[in-house]
Length: 477
Ligand SMILES: Nc1ncnc2c1ncn2[C@@H]1O[C@H](COP(=O)(O)OP(=O)(O)OP(=O)(O)O)[C@@H](O)[C@H]1O
Image (tube, rainbow, N blue to C red; front, side, top):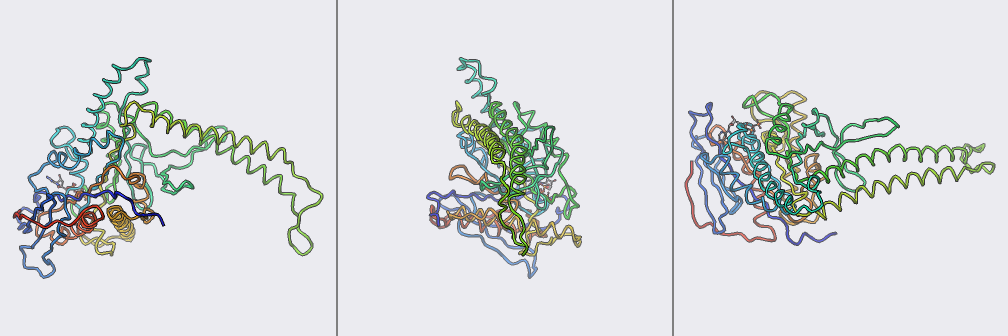
């Protein structure tokens, strides 16, 4: 068994209280106390103001949360504390992941995507990150132009590669490619591949497209593509409000240049060319070998002494296949070379934002919503899948926080799809738990916090940190 990671990545868990909404205006707020530790981590204690037996008081682990944002903290404040500190990591070529987890209507979409796409202070974390990243890239590009001696700046110029997709049931749906369905599979290389339907082209070429990457050279382009993609986002019937979604939305921003995108396209082209050549080699082999065995009188197959396969024909087909395999290997090597020889380490750096499906499906393993009307059989099935995904994600985050050598990525399509974003020991991961302060939502809120608490505690008590006693408390709400 492989040894545990030497420097497991600490996972940050934030809590974000939203304001009471118009339908909750009359409810009493949940009574909450925040304890601030010496290392500035937080713990939380909740008490329901209503005398309801099932609303049992709850206390988190000693230092489960990195920070707690009260209802008055807007998206800009949350961005400055959660995402902005990780921008230098992305500019070093690392991957930083952010998840929003909470029950329906608690503010996940408000946090990750936002509902105001114009005013800086209201942008969701994703768009604000795109804006800040693009500003940094503009500065780097200006330096590139200055240093450009061989007029290669157009292909080397940095931009943002945007990918938007949602995960529903066991598939991904590409929001930048007409909501086309893509399958999530593990390849023979042990990597996860998210690929669309097989297209048969002229000359028998077979192309299987990955999730579309849209190249953006300005912040406005990112915003425009986001708005187009959001039009396609499937929204289900809401249990809490009419924009509820029952899918996980994944939004990726990768630092790219046109040379890298072109090199990746060549890989797809080479893969397409290899498929018919590989098939031809297999067909020729089967054809030539079909006469090599015959049935004897007992029905068993025996070698046919009168038959000699055309070995030269088999060898020629195999050689042609090897040529195409070499062409593919060269195209893949070109992609690696471009990344490693970039004039700046930012190439390939990524922000990944995930607006998770409503946590009400993750209700003590039952996989059904605790809110709203009785779900239909299809909704129940979707609920079970969401439950599996959210459980799988928790286990992956815990395993990483604890520095375990074996991370259970295969346990759900969500964790399989996100696997490549967790590879390596660098980068960072964070979860924002979005919660309602309404006493009517006490059990949904404590369920969300319990989930984050498990991840936060694993991170705090993992091999790289010690538990720190609480030194100050403050009353909130
Ligand atoms: N921190 C906040 N400040 C102000 N308004 C908020 C905040 N969080 C959420 N809201 C508002 O509450 C409503 C519901 O929020 P949102 O759509 O983000 O919920 P959600 O968790 O994504 O729900 P679902 O899982 O059903 O999609 C929206 O109108 C949103 O603008």
